[in-house]
Image 1 (cartoon, rainbow, N blue to C red):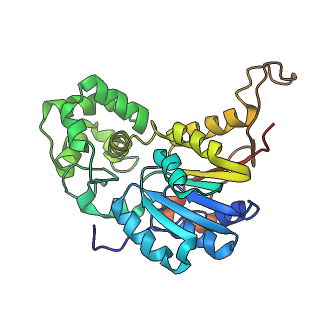
Image 2 (cartoon, rainbow, N blue to C red):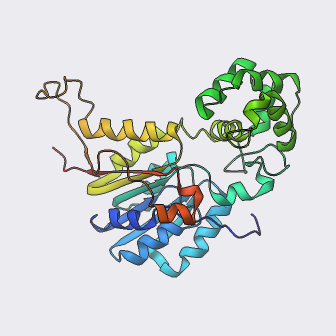
Length: 312
């Protein structure tokens, strides 16, 4: 556990509170509870709701437990990855009327230099959201083939210089610290590219963090589980900050809203697909200019939400 306070400003709190206001009485699963900011706002605004918070980061579990203690038995916090949501809900025996996902890395994780998430600090190459187990960024950097590194950097980081960076990493193994990795990436990126577009290691660090924590691999199954757990009239809302995340969220919600219908657009459905949700907005909500001015990390946020339909 860290003695450093868990600091993370929740994004689009007012919009989240408004979205969950109409849901029936029951439990909202905050699948990425973090410091408990969204959960506390929901509990303050909506007396008919309870919250079950999940997080894989022990620091977040500790912080959220403390922050939500004033709500008594209306709130519980669990150390679990969000793809284990059904296990937690089953053990609690609650009716789920809401699920919230706030995806990506938290400010606390980025600002804790010893966690290895940021290129701003020299630290062991870790990047695990749950530091109690699993492979680290060092494991990936030092074991992946050049081709696997290229694919990871392109898929998760949209890195234009993926081949050059991957070749340099392989040539300089072993790589054990973030500082050394930053040096390798910086030297691999052409000089003109280093002078524009921010820090040259940003995209590579993002790609490695996503790979270490399997963030995209577990997202669609977790969203499908969340939708299946919802009672009629319940809602699932997702905040995404990365184009890959948002594509998965958009497609999963669209498939649920059509039942996976394969019929030509504009014609009556003949394939027997049964929608399970309705989209609450075509497209995504975005943070206001005022919020972005207060919190620059909110700028890339995209909020999408669906409502569970009555069973056919």
